[in-house]
Amino acid sequence: MTQPQQPRLTSLRGVGALALPLLLASAAATQLVGCGDVVRGDGDGADDPRSVSAFRQVANATALEVQVAVGDAERVVVTCDRNLLEHIETSVDDGTLHIKTRRGAQLRPQGRCAVDVAAPTLEGLRNSGSGSLTMRGPAPGLASVQASGSGKVAVDGIKAPSVSVSGSGSGSIKVAGEAESVSLSVTGSGSIDAAELLSMSAEASVSGSGSISLHASTSVRARTSGSGGVAVHGAPAERDVKSSGSGQVRFED
Image (cartoon, rainbow, N blue to C red):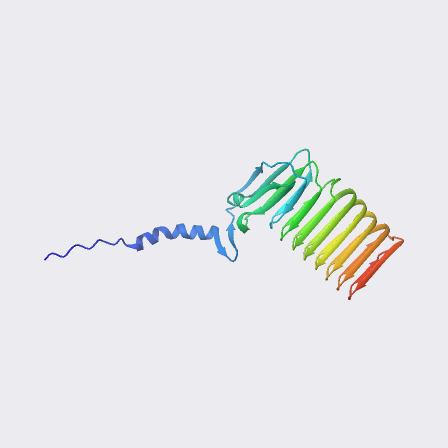
């Protein structure tokens, strides 16, 4: 009796040889690690103008460099490797421009990866994570600067009745300009350099090992808890200071 012919199995060796380059290319661009995907840039730099509605505040939650300025109209341009642009999201919610990476992707650009932002009025800046947020030029309406994480924030040209600056984590904030009154607070090991933010009155609070430097010409109220410190410039006549722990308030008259 003739045995029925068994179906021929296609060799997987040839298929594997063909698929291997594709798999390696995909793995080189995206690697799954931890809680997100590492996405490597292709080295092809490109600019991507974004269409956004009106906003008055900017919140950066990425590891990118964000440059902010006052301009005639809202403008958002993302510059990065072309294959990474789709992973950088920009959206406006309740007057705030949010900048973040899609689905927690960890971007590894080959060149400059930044977001350039402009708006007629900017009232607040917020930086979280390891990225940087920089505002150069006049900032007449800016009233709030916040930072959390290990990133950096730098702002010059402040000119406002009052300004609030706060930091948590290990990041740094540097602000300059003029204000009648300032409120400064640090929680953690971060720092606020406001020695070039000229004010009449200032309130400062440090909790942890962080530091604050400020300038007040009339009055200062400073509190430290932990090993952190406050340096006061401007020789204010009214001085209300208290420290608990090894931290201290110094007057650099």
